[in-house]
Length: 439
Image (cartoon, rainbow, N blue to C red; front, side):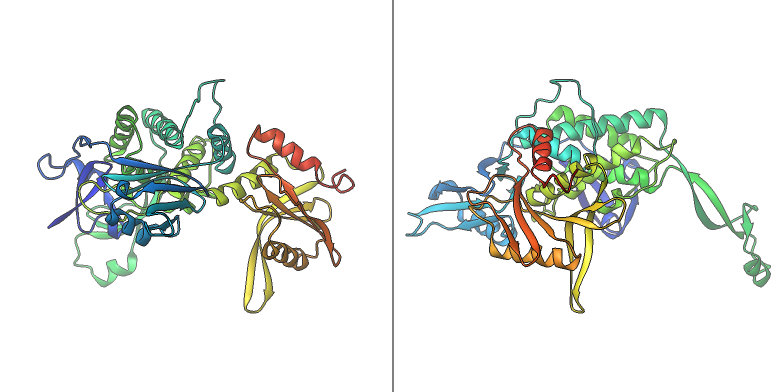
């Protein structure tokens, strides 16, 4: 028996012990043209699409959304979308509101939801560039993304082309330890087993083998696999993605990876270009969710958590533009008591003494004023690290900004805007900090 896993609309006929349980050599995917083949992308009819904007309530006529689709939204995507079914209070209309995630959700193959960001697309691209450390240098005017889908497609195209470029030069290879019984001596013989079983013709040997089937390359293959299942790329880009995926066949084992696998990897002169490749892979793996559909037209949702992205962006921007005499520390774990610990988003510390000068906490929302829960939280953070300055960072100016002392801790709300030029917004944010501290 065999089961089917799909790359976009590409059926990959795999044994049941394949990707779901660990790994499958890619060369198996092309071994038999009849049973083990990768077919062309199936032609899909365009799905019905409804559009939302993050945090904005949208209303739709009752007959526009089938009730079965509404039930799937409620049961499968309640963390992403607030939904209220047509009733007397809603004037028998559908009410939908994104909870802060943007992207594409294939509720069914025939019905998709597209959630647009409030942030201008060019600035969203800039946020991704900082947050994922892409450091892609584009000629002026080359990137003209008008939507989040185009941003996704642009980055997918860049990744596929760079993988093809690396394949032409040759994939990075490394030595991996291997142990097997062979009819000749290679590496180190397992002497104990040879003595215990002198009648064995083959000897168990331990040796290192140079191979391209390593994590560095497996991450690339898995990411291309995920991109193919998104259904978000045009045919021309999908063709490039397929070509890059094929180029890895025969060399790499198809193994599932989480986005964390792309972080804190080791790079040197032989694989330095993999740093960008893995940064791009992390973006796709980080923002691709599980599918709630099965069958021949299964597609994966692509969703960016804007609150997380805002936090990562501000952290990386500060890392790249740290005021003189300071350093940035991210995600410091603090223990409040034996039963409760927490992590602080950002700390701005004195480079000589290591003392925390500022506790920073990003809040991707636009309330009229600081919520008491957010104020209490950052005061607890500041108390835990013995800091006198606590800053809550918002993407928009508050109607009632906060600048008040609670005990010996000064709590302020400041703005790191996403509406205009990001670098200018960052500089404005830094200048709003007390000058006697950042002298």
